[in-house]
Structure formats: structure tokens, C-alpha cells
Length: 159
Image (cartoon, rainbow, N blue to C red; front, side, top):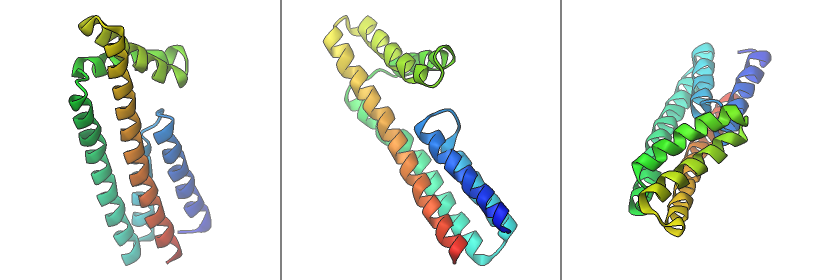
């Protein structure tokens, strides 16, 4: 792959990493697909090993980002219904207030749902904080997996 191609792959990886932190794009998927395209084009033993590592990291990250935070939120008694309502209001909020509306809508949706079920503002806010921690944990897991895949790719490029 020529220099321009490598720079384009690096750019897509960077966009993917930003997409994890600012949830507008499927960031982890973009990182994985950029590495996959690079591996197919380069077509060397090293590129296939890097793709294997990136695949393992992507799959592990996706599994862990859903299992670990969900388990913690269940332990904190955050209702699944509240997460769904928070997600719906987050999507609506994203279009009302670009980017920031996602977070504002999610927090508002979880809080309102928990408050309507518990009728206790303190317990509703505690559940909302647990939901926000769960989202942050999921984002951290996905970002870690994508960064490790990026490191593998950088090593593969210079190997």
C-alpha cells in the first residue's frame, strides 16, 4: 500500500477513535474496517496477523462493553426500561441539540423513567448516576479495544 493509502487508513482509524468518544459514528467498527481494508490491500502475512489481532480485540471489546456495564447496572437496580427510554430521548436530543443533546436526553430519560417508577428523586438520581457510569464504562472498554487494535496496526505498518 502506498503512503497515501496508509494515511487514509490512519485517518479513518482516527475518525473511528473520535467516534467512540463522541458517539456519532460507529467508532470501533470504523477502526476495525479500516484495518481490514489495509490487510486486504497489503496482503502479507503480517497484515493478516494484524487483522486477526484486531478482530479478536474488536469482538472481545464488543462483548465486554455490553456484558460488564449491564451487569453493574443490574446490581445497582437500574431498570432496562429506563435505559431504553434514556436511549430514545438521547437520540431525540441528539437531533434537537447536536452532539450534546445525546447525553442530555439520555440522562433526562433515565432520570424521568426511574423517578416515575420509584417516586423518590434521590433514588432516581442514584440510578441515573449508575447508568451514566455504565455508559462511560462501555465507552472506555470500546476505546481501549480500538486503541489496542490501532497499536497492532501501527506495529504492522512498520514491521
